[in-house]
Each structure stands twice: as C-alpha cells, then as structure tokens.
Length: 358
Ligand SMILES: [Zn+2]
Ligand SMILES: [Zn+2]
Image 1 (cartoon, protein in one colour):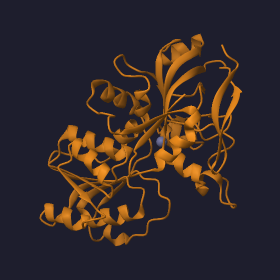
Image 2 (tube, protein in one colour; image 1 turned 60 degrees about the vertical axis):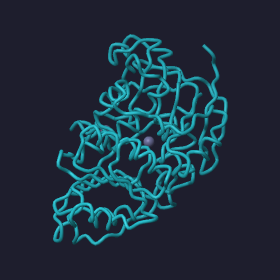
Image 3 (cartoon, protein in one colour; image 1 turned 90 degrees about the horizontal axis):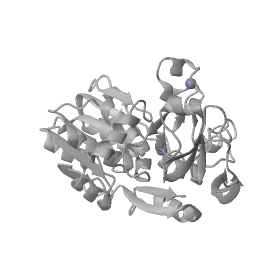
Image 4 (cartoon, helix red, strand yellow; image 1 turned 90 degrees about the vertical axis):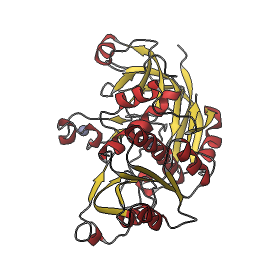
C-alpha cells in the first residue's frame, strides 16, 4: 500500500491546489475506497467561486470547513475494510461501491425520525476537513456512519458516480407525485433536469415540457423524450405553456434552474392546485407575490433536498439502462487537470456533468 496520494485541496475561493497527502488509514468499522470517478457539482462551482454560504460572510461562518478535499459525487472500489464494516455494508475488498454524499450523525432529531438527509449536523463528503474529506483524490476514507452500496454487475464503476445526481433527481421527481394525466414542466435542463426529464418519460404523463435558455440543452431534452421544448430566451415560456393547456397551466412544475426567474415563471405557468417542486440552490434571493400561492391558485410548494433512500433506485435505473448518462456526462478529466475540469463544468453552453478520474 502506498503511503502518499494526490488530492485536490480547497484552501479558499479560487485557491484549489493539487497536493500530495498521506493516504488515510481506516479505523474500526470504516473503509478505504480507491476512487474511480467523482463529479463536479453545481455546489462545487458555487464554492470555488467563493459563495458566502460555503466560506462565511463575516457575520456567520461558512458551511465548508477548509482546507478540505472536495468531491461528494463519487464511485470507487473497496481497498481496505475490516470485518465489522464488511458485515454492516455487505461489501468486501475489491467490490465496486457508491456512498451517499451525506454523512448522518444518527443522533439528531432528524436522523432519529428517519430524515437523515436533513441531519442537523449536516456533514457532507468534500465540505468538512478531517470529518468528511471528499473524493477529488486517489483515495477516500469512508466513515463508519456512512451509507454504502455495492454497484451491481453490468454497471460501469466510473459511470456509477452519476448515481449521486440521479438519486437527487429521483427524490425531486417523486416529490412531484406525477400522474398520467398531468402536464409536467421541467425548468432548467442541467444534470438534475436531464434526469428528471428521463424519469418523467418513464411515467409518461400527458405532456412533458422542458424550458431552458441553451439550445444544446434543449436538443438533449428532445433526445430524452420531451414532447415540447421552449427556449425562454427566444419565446415567452409562460404564454407557450398556457397556450398548450387551454390557459390552465401545468399540473407539476420542477424548478431546477437555480435562477430566481425560474421561480416567477413557475408561479405564472402553474395551474390552480398545482404542485411546485423546488430543488435549486440559488445565487440570490427570489422575490415573488405570495398571494399566488394561497389566494389566487392554492398551489403546493414542495421542497426537496438531496436523496433520502433513493440510491438503490438510482443504481437500478442506471444498471437497467432505463436512465442514460450519455449526453449528461460532457467531460472526463484526470485529477491533475482539475482546473480545466472546473472551467469546462462552468461552461453551460457546452457542458452538463464533468467527471474527475483520479
Ligand atoms: Zn452535488
Ligand atoms: Zn443527524
């Protein structure tokens, strides 16, 4: 076993470096994973650019504790494991695995209620130094409190890094409780949006509409089976959806744009008693007339966060080929080129998900 490994280390906004550090030693009930692939998330880009939520704003501390190795969307192979961890997770040395991004404390009220994805401590791989070092590295230490799953035969180990965003999309999608007669709008055709479109296609609602402002993304939405695509930069998306529905609007609206205008647009194009699913992380606050929610439309605003209990579903969707990553993965870079990978990930006109392959 080598003693040193290469890892990316986040020291501060735009100060990320490739360094050598010692390979972590798994303790009782833990495992050491050799990283196969790790995705770059929108949240990683927000952090890289220095968003106050991650680094603090002078009055309150940030959620991220640096210096830390980023990376929470990962897959790999068990390198070292003890009997206790092996029994607990049902995996052994050499097995391909994915691990949930959240590292639950299992002691707070949320964890005890089964809502471990809302854990009050909320450590997540790649955001808290020492406690939850991420997988932009050759090896990653998996904490004994983690949720670990074996990757089924037939699914490529590196591709399985896409289980994290897909599991998030499964949670968001199911939150909307889509029914066969529904008109469904997916606003924002990024990685999560692209997966939600494919999931909606599996259910086959009455009409599936995708709204974005990038042609490359709308092309992909067509390939994934959208009935109608709308480029909101060129046409009035609200008018279009109202026109398609005799003026009623959509039954379900998935807000995965990350932009405040996606909220306003949704409130305008959703029908009365509609279900508005919010999954985005926003760079700035969204301002809306709340009378739409109650008095005018009596809609349900449904928030969804990460991926409770959806990793097994996502693994099976990828294994069976019912959901595809082709077109969603737009770049694969070696760890040493992480800066190029970040650049590519930030280029929305050509890119959705970029993977680092240590
Ligand atoms: Zn993520
Ligand atoms: Zn907890």
